[in-house]
Image (tube, rainbow, N blue to C red):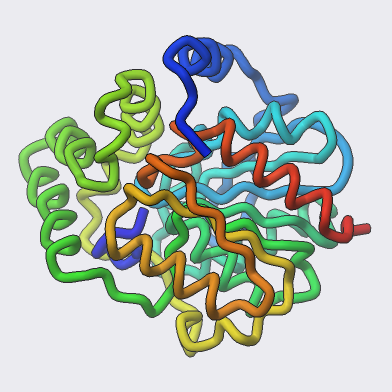
Length: 295
């Protein structure tokens, strides 16, 4: 998520929400595998056939963030999701690495020439960086509650997030509980099934709260001053109950990328892929229909 780690339409009804989350835990992707990249391994899975869509999760979450998008996409696309190192089932880097290099290696290994990139939070920042470094490999961008490299969150949001890392000194469980109290999830807290899904997606990466430093080698110059270079069709999705810093990031990205469209989901916080999946899926699938499919 947009943390000082420096990663920096209406809600579904209670009945439909229960049904959606029941499906979330029964859906199985067509394959679950690993690939070797420079310095480690990536865990990924995929489902469906058609134009490739690659899903990039937020920090301290894992690829299960996209459990509600995979079945929606698989009917018309080749949907691929992976755990960004060091999260989930992917390996812990031994030295700083470029997330864009891993994404490129994944695409090459899976013989994907161009892909629609869908990024949540930190994963949105990865997608933006990749579009700057490898523009010919990007068919479109969908940026959900997105971070952007080079942006700085307000001091109060950084201070709040630091409490998670302080809690990690006590235990991983304490860190996860502190994570769940962040204002990122202000709207989700009234929906136990959403909070359970966030907790589940975070649990696999709980040990990473104890890392001494982020293992990411940033692109230079950072993306915040280069958004005007991006030419890919772009959809930006935000929630009006996300934190002010994250909302500002979404607005900056939408204004900085020529032709980008901004969709704000009423009542949504930082957990849009999980808690507002219906709204996101409708916006995403509609957007993908308007873009030129990659070869």
